Image (cartoon, rainbow, N blue to C red; front, side, top):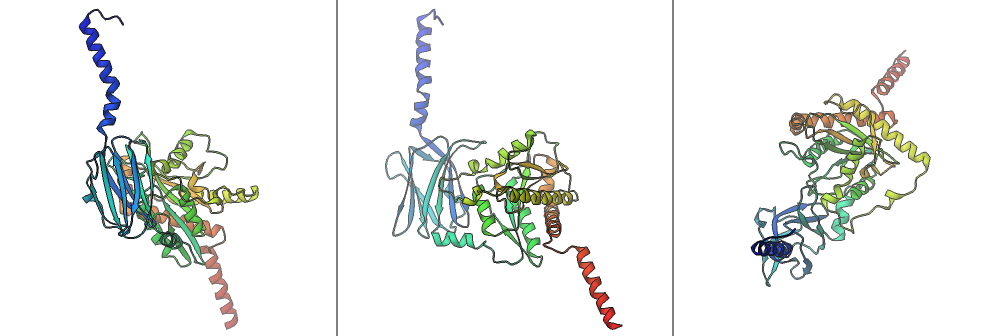
Length: 406
């Protein structure tokens, strides 16, 4: 471009220098801690900082008394710590200060010797840069939190997995209903129904609003020696008129051919990226163990039967999106020795269905449908006696009594 006037040349040069300097100016301005959140899990406490941009930081421990210190370089605090639910099982108090120029220091007084673990997450799915600090409890407490779910129950154990949680809200409806809240509510209702049934026990993979990695969900189901796993979710799409439940099983060699199943599996499998998983997250080597083709076929067939029963019972609770089970590569279903299904209760993106999903009455209806399907599955598998079997047994007893009377 040829500039005709000297003044134009000068203006252009100044604009070029300013634009080139903008990134450096932004960096010099530093990052702003816009928000802070606290999540309490059985084996750790997680603190999350929302940041306006990437940041340099340092995390270290101090003793006598026990403290965790976070130094944020060139950062300013806009968030407020007094909104956090403190004290929690790990943190007694949080305070902050500026011990040096350009250093924002956050100090957490902790109740026990914890191991800090940190990771910086890049912006994704509408979330900004996030600094995640996990305070891992001592090995004894971690073991107690995990082994508390290890079942010595002699009957039937069902792992109930509420999808998402903590930093990962899942899908969000038009009226801001969060998938993670719906799934936990239905999961707790289902667990209550299961535990009321003699000879059956429910194990909640997630008991509260905190994040559990996909690998750990599989691990906890195995630790519980579960006979079945139900992973509960609620779907969302752009078209708000879409509604209905659907049920998925694991596809061993890839998702079903339609795009919807592939997209859904990719979205659910991305939960770890949204929630934040550290490099040293718990890993269960059995996820990759080699199983015989016969075992794989039997496992997939059992899951298919379970999925069909789920759809059949869910028809009585509301609309159905897909009339037959679909298969996709969901990581949470990878415990192939456990018949597992992923249930999308409905579309939270549909305003009318969102209202239903928020209703306690409807949540109970959905939980009952999932329970009834589970009972029918175990009857088909010969683990429980059906009503017909019980009636036949009672008739045989009556016949014997009558024969003896004669």
